[in-house]
Amino acid sequence: MHFAESYVTEDLVLRTARSLANEVGLEAVTPGAGATLRLLAAAGNARAVVEIGTGTGVSGVWLLRGMRADGVLTTIDVEVEHQRIARRIFTEAGFVAGRTRIITGRALDVLPRLADGAYDLVFVDAEATGFTACVDAALRLLRPGGVLVLNGALAGGRIGDPAARDAETVTVRETVKAIRESEHWIPAVLPVGHGLLAAVRC
Image (cartoon, rainbow, N blue to C red; front, side, top):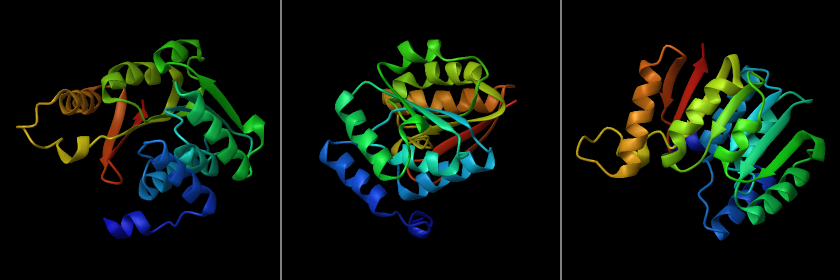
């Protein structure tokens, strides 16, 4: 696990963004998870990506580095201050303002305004309580062959423990089960970072 996390090293921009996340009390995606996001964006030749949970820009930089040179990242967060930091990080990473569309607001208020079938990848890094609604939105937003990625799919290591019945774990467990059983998705759980559930839209 440690080797997987240290396999792709982070540069100064990402280390700075990660340090700023720690300062404001956020848990950014791990380097291994970030590298996976970059890989998925690159594999799908992603031009239009939605990120739910901007944070301080760690995952956004990873995604942008995998996307096409003309790709646009639409990133949503309720915290203006976090987005202010992320905007600076995106600039320091060398991305012009036109590569990002930073929207402040609740994801469930913003997502209905985004176009159907217009996106190549949707990354959800939000509270587990919003997973179901975000998955439903992703099904509408993604083109066929587009990829949904949920962060935190291992529920802090509790996902496989039947005795773990806290609300967060139960929600994550029900979400990953529903995606596995749905005819709309081709899923896999990737054991990097806090667990990524990746699913291709049929």
